[in-house]
Length: 539
Image (cartoon, rainbow, N blue to C red):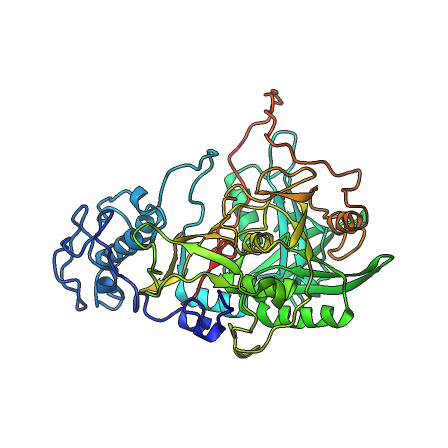
C-alpha cells in the first residue's frame, strides 16, 4: 500500500470534527448477524420531537435515527438517549454479542451505559473490557485539544497500603509553568500529608476522602496544603497549592547524550494528545540536526491517545524507506463490519505510517508539512505498566516492519483496542470498537509487552525487566532505566541488577501478617486521566 496523503485518509481529519453530530455518517445496521436489523421495532418513529420510544428486547433501531434526541432540550427523552446508546453499542462495540440486553428503564443514563459492555474474562483470567468511559463533551474538547485539565501540575505514583507495605505517594514528573514547579516540587518528592491527614496512616473513609479530594481536584481554585519530603533531604516542608487549569507539555526533556560510542538522543513523551504533534516535530528536527546514532524513547508514563500521532512518530523514528508501503496498524471491527468502518462508513483501509503533519491543532502546526525523520534501525523504549494503548501500538508497529525494539522497564498495560470518541446530547462516550494489528498481522498483547532477556513469545521483547527509579530525574544518565538502556547499547545485555521476567508468575504463599485490608484506597476516578490510557481515532 502506498503512503496515503493524510488529507485523503478517511479516519484521520482534524480533531475539530470530533464534536460534530454523533452519527452523521454512522448508524448503519447489518442484519446478517447478531440482533440488529431495521425490522426491529421501537415504539414511535425514533425521529426528533420527543415521540414516544419504548424498549423491545432484541430489536434495535439504527442509532443514527436516535441521535441528538436529548432530554435537556426536550427534543427527546432520557429513554431515547439510552436507546441511542443501546443501538450504537450493538452496532459498533467489538464484543456486542456479549452485552446483556437489559430493559433501560430502571437505570440512570450513566449506569445504563456502564453496563453496556462484556462481563467476560480474557483467556488469562483478566477483565476483558477495562476501557469503558464517558465524560462531558466540553471537557473532552478542552482536554484533547489543549491538554488542559484541572490540577497542580504534578503527576505521581501511588503505592496503596498492603501487607507489609505502607501507603506512599511519590511525584513522578511535573508540568512546566504550573503550581507544582512554582513551589519547586520535582520528581522524587514524597507527599507525607494532605490537608493535615497523614498519607501513610489514613485508615478511615473520612481521611481517604480528604486525600482523594486533595490529590484529584475537580475545580480550579481549590487550595490544598501538602507536606512534602523532597528527594535527598531529611527535613519536610509544607506548601499550599491552588488547583488551576494546567496545560500539559507532552514532549519534554529532549536532549543528546554524548557517549564513547556515539550520540544518543533522549525524548520523554507523556501523551499522544493534539499539542504533542508540534512538540514531536520540533524534537525530531533537533535530534536529527544533532546527528544521533540511537534514540531512547521514554514512554513510561504515556497512556496513549491519538493513534495517528503514534503513526507519525513511527515514521519519524524509522524514516521513509523503512515505512514505505508498510502498514502501521490494521483496525479490525466486529463481525458486522468486516470490510467497512462502522463510524465513517468508509471501506476499511490499513493505517499507513504518516509522513506528513495532520494538523490536530492547526494553531500549532498545520496539515501537510513533511515530517522529519531519524532513519534509525532500532529503538530503545522505556516502559512501565502505565505505558498503554497508542504507545503499545507504536512499539508493535515498529516490530512489524523489523525495526529492532529493545524494551527497558516493566510490562506494559496491554491494550490492543481502541475507539472513536462519540458525542451525543452533551456527553462523549468511549467504548471498545476495534482491535489493532501490525504489518505482520500481530496484535495479541492484551497482557502487555514483556521485557525479557530471552524472549520466546511475540509479546516478549528483548530487554531488561526493571522497576521505575523515582530517585533520579528523568533524562539523568544515572536513572535506572536510562542507565540500563545505555549499558545494553554498549554490551548487548542487561546490567547485573536486571533480571529476566519469569514466564509464569510464581505463587505467593499465604503468610498471616496481621494486616487488615480496610478497603480504603487512593484512586483517581477523573476521566481526564483515565482517557489518556487509550488509542483514539478521529473521523
